[in-house]
Amino acid sequence: MADSQREQELLETAKEVQLGNYRPAPFVLTRGQGCRVEDVAGRSYLDLSGGIAVLSVGHAHPRLTQAIADQAARLMHVSNLFYNDRAIELAHELVQRTSLGKVFFANSGTEANEAMIKLARRVHHDRGDTERTELVATLGSFHGRTMGALSVTGQKKYHVGMNPLIPGVHHVPYNDLDALRSAVSDRTAAVILEPVQAEGGIIVGETAYMQGVRKLCDETGALMLLDEVQTGYGRTGRFLAAEWSDVVPDACSLAKGIAGGFPLGAMVVSDSFANGLPPGSHASTFGGNALACAAGLAVLQIFDDEHLIQRASETGAHLGRRLEQLTDCESVVEARGLGLLRGVAMAPDVDPIGVLAAVRERGVLATLAGGTVLRVVPPLIATTSEIDEGIDVVQAVLKNPPRK
Ligand SMILES: Cc1ncc(COP(=O)(O)O)c(C=O)c1O
Image (cartoon, rainbow, N blue to C red; front, side, top):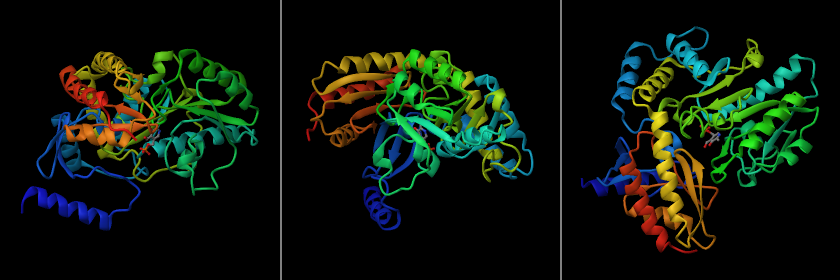
């Protein structure tokens, strides 16, 4: 059967058997290598979407695939009734690299955020402050799809039809310290925010704001919870994006790039709150699974050997310059971001979905953030020439973009 015919058949089957909650591009990917992926029909694409900021070491990195194969043949899963060596080793690495205290493993970003929310409530509860249950979050934020994480997500479109959400959540504008100050009270268990609002449109948290949040939390006793699911793990050119503002959170969540595409999430907690979840208070069957943690360890070894965080900082600066040049096009309003988490805001009359389709037709995969921002989050292994190749295509499309 011709490959393109096989692809058509798969697309038709997908429509029959997969839920319609996604809007996938009309082709079927089947393999990847480095920054490139290939579909069933044999077309190749340069992947600037990075699996939505997940593919920290690119597709099919030989050391990551080897580590996964070796671990799968040795020990995959034992449950958290028993220690496994890989989880201990990875937790040790995360503690070292974040300067925080202890780690809880989950399977995704939303679960890591659920853990942070539960930690904050439980900490105050166990101190006898049972009224401190409220959460302050930011408008435009994205924290995930499970009910707790969804409730703190500050975008109404994700709440449609999902009510009632968890009570006691207040949303305030991002980068607005005064608004935050008036929302935090003696009932606030925690403030949760992203160092860069990623899904919300790549909005960088200002240094004074991040430091102000830290100070406010110190003064009021609310925990500062940082969602580093998209920003963490070297994506911005630092291990945690919080390092850009010299802020240490009380807990942070990690996922996406942590195991290079293998499902894994983590909550890392400061020493002060490291005993906040006593035995039985929270758990995850798969969390800290030996196979996922072996993938996580391999990613860190690759980071170190290939200096990927430093590289992300350098290639990210290059990407930033290239995106800044795009603001010469009348279709581009602004370039923004940090490291390899970047985007360009497109003018209101530009058709964002049409732009994605047009760059795809020229062999480049990208995503959107905040509806109108073309997001560029390539694997951290991307070279400047791969970035140039991709941005040349984006530039050609944005010079004469599809309009609404
Ligand atoms: C900042 C942030 N938090 C949480 C999540 C949810 O992560 P997951 O889809 O792994 O549950 C995402 C996903 O895009 C995210 O960007």
